[in-house]
Image 1 (cartoon, one colour):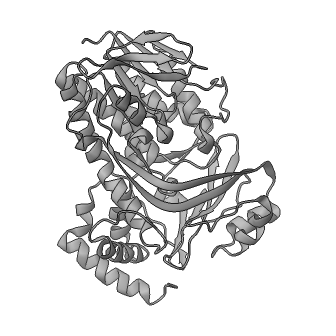
Image 2 (cartoon, rainbow, N blue to C red):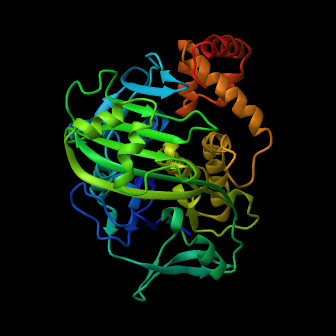
Image 3 (cartoon, helix red, strand yellow):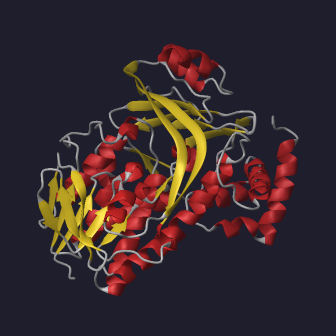
Length: 442
């Protein structure tokens, strides 16, 4: 086993970041995708969520910059919108807009197709990378004794590889592929959340949102379940989205106007009434979050790892998936550097790293989802206590800039959750939440 050839299955964000990490560590990298990949920044069938809002957290932006130096400026040059989340994006929860605060974090807002196209062009520019589209995978080649030795395509062609990376997303067939080589399959946990959303594109007009460049309206659980979002993207456009938990979201265009009017802030209703619609609404459902525990497997094959949503598929409302995919790619590079080749020892070490990466965002997402009594699935121990404290943190964030800065840094995976439990911070949270409760609509 060497470092001659790596195959990445899937050309979305997880696959492209993995391919970039591998391009400096393997003689050749082949990226395979079943879609016909567009040349321009256009939606594609294999990424049905691609027309909906996506966010790259601050830690994800840093990871992407490490993988693709200069990517921030390249996206901005293509029309993406840079912003400071605490100062430029209005955040509505617990009865009102949160006061502005400088968090010290930098983000950039774009459409998912623009990000994918930009990354794909950067990856394809590497002399040792080949991207093949319109290619369907039948399965893996190899054996229980050899590990994974390559892939077999639907047309019968086989491709040998020293490492195969499954970046096929939530619909990964890794369980079937691994079982076909007599390897154990990982334990899978699902948390049923019944999330869905509707998104359209509007022309961006200067001054329409006096509070900032965009707005994010989140519900106060357990009674409220609805979400509203306006984000700027390239081409002087806005993505306008409506969503919610447990079926409380628009399912047809006919229901959107009344949904918007019932949100606790008028921005989205005003957009529907006076904004210039560019594209019709598209709809997407996300029934459950799903996590595969590869790190618990006693036996994993050499020559194979899964990454991104193929390992953990988060509630998209929290915007964690692309960030974790980029962090996974960096971890893959580190583990290859440490272990030399794609042995089973390297694969186990990689899955331990991935488990560490997704632990905090999974806890945040699942914890937030279990604030709704309708949520079904394995409920982490102590989550009700943590949710109670999280509510206090968010209340305090409305009146205490230091709590808001720390909370935002933890959300963006820049600081560990323990930062919110330091004695001085706990005192600020308790005092601030009491003060905020006096003026908050629950």
